[in-house]
Image (tube, rainbow, N blue to C red; front, top):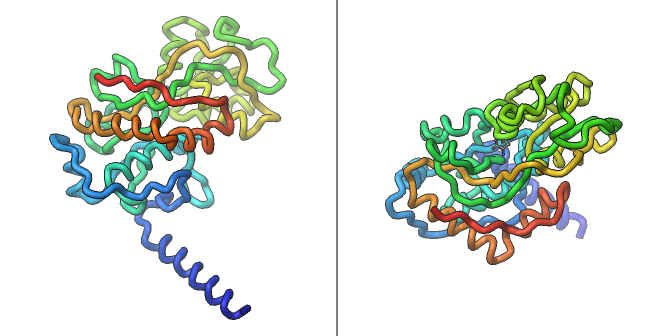
Length: 294
Ligand code: GLU
């Protein structure tokens, strides 16, 4: 009996090692929330981006790597996890790609339009607000989630309670994001501290260099849930941030296909399962939003 289970154990270990060794992209083999078996015989008539993906035999997904609950790369395992990552993987699978055929490319807020329009990624899933300004350069499937701008402060802070309490405060956010633009447009403070990533802002908050971090509540709640004794989310949200899957501006066929994929995941409970197992753990309950077909 003992020998038998040892043999089984060794065989399982060997399988695991083989799987790791074959993976060309670190993170591609992490355990997904849903099974993500690749769909068979997928066609997307009239989609140049899909044709390029097929010819390459791989999909290149734009993601984030420092947003807990949304798009996060574990420093020790090298594996990606989170709501956005799961949505990106679901799309890849429904387009016919297996986990080993996925490449993850980290794209910061300010680089998303450029990276998509240059064709360096096939699609972007990373807290990417759909808006008219961005639609001049890219298109969006979705929305697959709706967030809202919020504020993150030190746990013992009492004077910051909403956007109107930021005057004279040092407020940190990310270059090229809609929340930093809103702070500027509405003149909420003249002391804006700007970085490429939200984790840099959170570090500055914890070390006392800035008074608040502002961006989507979903992102802020993820950080707060990691260090609840140090930082907290305060006040009501003060914007609407519908998250879309960023795509080549002219590839209407791929946008329609991805919208169909999302709709199916809304209808069969897959979206709900993904949400509950990722973002739902640090945020509030949510259900899928209505798609914007255009
Ligand atoms: N959703 C906002 C945006 O697209 C903020 C989050 C981010 O920077 O990715 O700009």
